[in-house]
Image 1 (cartoon, helix red, strand yellow):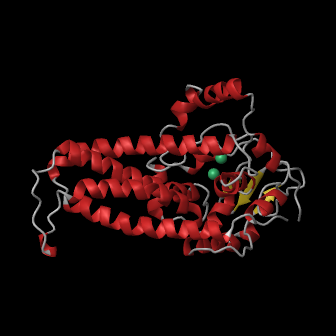
Image 2 (cartoon, helix red, strand yellow; image 1 turned 60 degrees about the horizontal axis):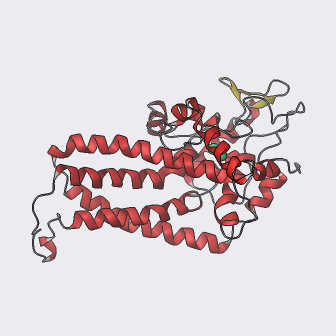
Image 3 (cartoon, protein in one colour; image 1 turned 120 degrees about the horizontal axis):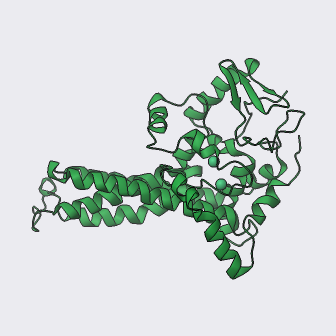
Length: 325
Ligand SMILES: [Zn+2]
Ligand SMILES: [Zn+2]
């Protein structure tokens, strides 16, 4: 009988250890009801993740996706030490400059800025969500793992994620978010550059700010960029939460319930083969509107018309690699 807890040699963090431990404790009461594609749990039934239309669970109850998938194992093996080093440097750089930026943003906040901060927050939620969808769509739909540099560096985790969706919950922050930290570093740098001229640094023996008081719009713009950078850094953590079914802290479940981050149910729609909709993985605010206007198929139609290339051919190739056990 297939078990939902997994044995892994990957680096794991406390949250994932907790979630897997709870999962393991419930294992004796959890099983896949073969033929109905539902997982029986103590509290009732839950659909197998990524199997809403039953296209991955054969009658014997052993899913074709997961850590035992041959393609997933091959893709996981392509994670190199060089890539890890690059992600580690990006993560620590973003942490340092992000902390400095947060201090500058906090020291310059005034209650009069509140309406602009609110606008900045909503805009950042929309912009971050759109770009999460655009990058996700581009990486899922085009290119191949065999491409130089970006193949293994950027596209590999996207291919792995479709055939082993819960592998993300066994990866640590550096592996899931190192690349996103690299994107946030220039954003933090710009915000710090803008805000430092309004910051009183006299405690360090420097002259007080000589420029005039900052305008609402200037602070609002910096605040928008700050929330955007934070959401960019957190995008894959949020994505990880949408695949974590056990042991999530209550405050994260609240954020999902309030749609401040993409809810589990919504992201599961993306994991229905052939993975052609609901690409946004930050706030999820744009998933329904973009699906409703047919944004992704229209974009794909244009690209196919120009290049003659069909979307997701590489994704389908990896999905069809046979299961080994
Ligand atoms: Zn995807
Ligand atoms: Zn996912």
